[in-house]
View 1 (cartoon, rainbow, N blue to C red):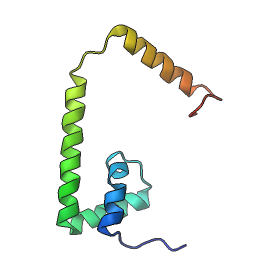
View 2: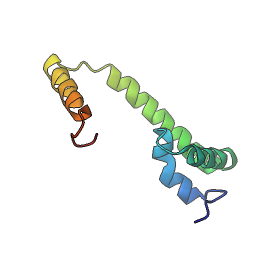
View 3: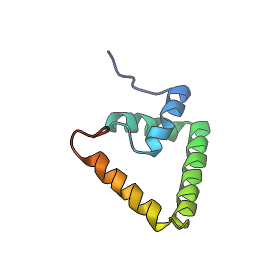
View 4: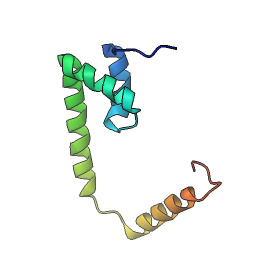
Length: 88
């Protein structure tokens, strides 16, 4: 199967969340970046979503997490990292 040399707006939009999360392959990242460099509409959508995520992360960092919730969360994350556990 041939890989695309360029992405359409629809393809870029479908991959935008993964692009923002850096969850794409190097080739997919390159294709999205190239599209964003040449398409003002998609670049605008990218800036909006990127700014939104940055602001959300900033606000979430200011919320105090109760110690018992933090302990349960870290225990769950540690358990999920063990070999043979779901998601490992």
